[in-house]
Each structure stands twice: as structure tokens, then as C-alpha cells.
Image: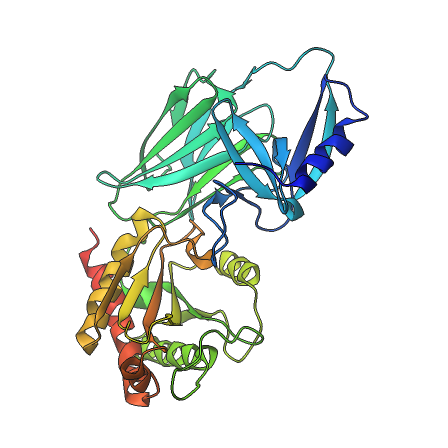
Amino acid sequence: MRSTALGFIFFVLCFSSFSQDSILLAKSTGELPFIKYGIGEDRLGGAKMGYIDSNIILKVVDSFKTDYKVQLSKYHSGYIAKENTILLYKALRKPVTNNPDLSGSIKVFGDSAFDYVTVHLKQHLPYHSFQLINPSCIAVDIFGATSNTNWITQLKSSKEIKNTWYEQIEDDVFRIYIQLKHEQHWGYGIAYDTAGNTLVIKVKPQPTVLDIRKLKIAIDAGHGGDNSGASGISSGIIEKNYTLVIAKYLQAELKKAGVKNIFMTRTKDTSLSMAERIMMLREYNPDLLVSIHLNSASSDTIQGVSTYYRYIGFRSLSEALLNRMLSLGLKEFGNVGSFNFALSGPTEYPNALVEVAFLSNKEDERKIISPKFERAVAQKIYLGIADWLKQIK
């Protein structure tokens, strides 16, 4: 992979006034900074490693058009958008060594809302997390850290965490495992505490009662405002209008079922960025999210319904929704995993995206513009959520 000419000029200018004993650092900033695996791009923005907290210190080793390449550990690197960084410089009194930070003690505890795992570090190091199933587990890699953890204190106040342990998988990659008591992942968030250098992993416990009427359900009507989405192949209808219609039908269906706590990311033709939607959802803290879209393809022969998830621990929700949607007589386009859509990125709550049908296909388009079909879609999504809750142990 070769950097652009702009990247080369950047490094010449940056380092011309610094000695070889200086390094270039960046601090993450903004509401939702994230690390990417590479600089590949597609309509979803390239493959994301995951969101990180702000004020994390990263070592910059190369510059590309819109991204910096950062060294996460000896054998791992990633890419962060320049707009999500503030550049820093560090003059060293001795040559750079690969001397990782040491981790401190780990503590596991809970309160009325969440369980917590905390680990003490010397600075805000970058991290990456992923979900495991059978058994259900959260794994967090802390880059640049080596264990000096000599005990893990686990208190009975934790409700969802069954066990916690760590593994030094590389000299400078420290992995924490958090095993859950239930099969279903209900979400977690990672951030540094505001007072110091303690990394806090906040784990959401399974609801005490799996009754849809007791849950906080979020509905996202895709697109809106200046983002119109796809258009119908024959009628020219606009995606943003029909996702909102279906979302409102779903809201009504949930209310009819007794659900009192429903959050809509939009209720009218409003322009909302992905970041704005995610921040709204983070504040609402739902038990689950369903995002509604209408699909489009370059070929008018492609048709059918599909559901999408990013994290393996949330796959069961998207499967349950797809199973119900197929009862509408739609062809199956599939259940798509590792989906790099912005609203699939948060780990804080189970989420799934439903692509109802293809506006670029005449048969699907005819269904989409039918109010009877729209109401049926809403009912099937509601029933899919209900099915998912019934299968949870």
C-alpha cells in the first residue's frame, strides 16, 4: 500500500524541524472517532475496526489523503480520519523503544443499571472489542499494554458478568475476556473515566422480564431531509418517504401491543446525519433498535427482503426479523453479517437493519406502494421482535 504524494509532503514538512528522536502523535477527538482496518473505500466508508473514545493517544506513522496510519502495537496498525484527530509532538531524550505500558488491577462490579469491568492503565491506550458466542463473551484488546495485573476482584453486585479473565496474546496486546450469564448479548460500551486513566467496560444486563411491553424500543426511518435514498424504478417514489410510513406503522403496532417506551429517530422529513442518530440513540439507551430501509440494485431483476447485522451477538435479532418478513411472500435476499453500516456500528444495544424490498424491481415496487403491504411489514417486524424475545433463555 503506497501513500499519496500529499502524504509524503506532509511528513517531509512535519519532520523537517524535528530530530530523529521525535515522534508524531495524534489525539482522537470528536463525538464518534473510529479506527479502520485499511484505507479501502466503498459506499459504507471502508471496513471499521470500531469506535474509540476521544483523547486516546495514537502514534502516527504515515499520512494519506483523508486518514493517518497509526501504530497500535508492534504488529498492528489502523487508520483514523484526520478530522477526528489533533496532532501532537513528543521530543524524546532517548531512542524510541517498544516498551509497552503496564496494566493494573481489574475490578468487576455492578449497580442498578449496568455491570462494570475496570482496568487501570498509565495512559489512554487504543482498544478494539468483539463478541463471542457459545458461550457468550465480550473480548477487549488493549493495544500497547503488557500485564502487571496480579488480581481480578469480582463482586457479587454484578448481575450479568459470569466471569472475567485476561490473556497476554502478544507482548503488547492485553486481552480481557468477559463471560456473560445469558446467551444473548444485550450490549456494552467502552470509555475511559473522566478523572484518570481507568478503562471502563460497561455491560448491559439482560432485562429481568422479557416482555416486549417492558422494553425500550428504538425505530429508525432510513434517510430523510436532504438524503432521499433510492427511488422507484417505475413510479419514482422516494425511499425516505416510505421508510417513514413503515416506521410509523411499526410505532402504531407496538403501541397496540402495549409498548409504552418507543423512540423514533425521526417522525417527519428531517435531515439527520448518522452521527446525530447514533448520539440520540446513545442518550435514549434502547433495549433494541430496528432501522428500516428500501433496497436498490443496478439490475432490475434483483428482488427480495434482507436483514443486516454487524456483530455476531446481535445476529439472532436479524434472523428472527427475516423469518417473519419472508412470510409476506417476498423472495429471500439473505441475512447479511459484518455489515459496515453506521447504525450497525454501536455495541451498546442489539440492532438490526431491515431492507424491506427493492425499489429497483417492478414487482417489489408495486408491493411497497401498497398501504396494505406497508402495514403488513410493520406487523411482521413486531412479530419478529416478539419471536426473538421468546427464544431468549
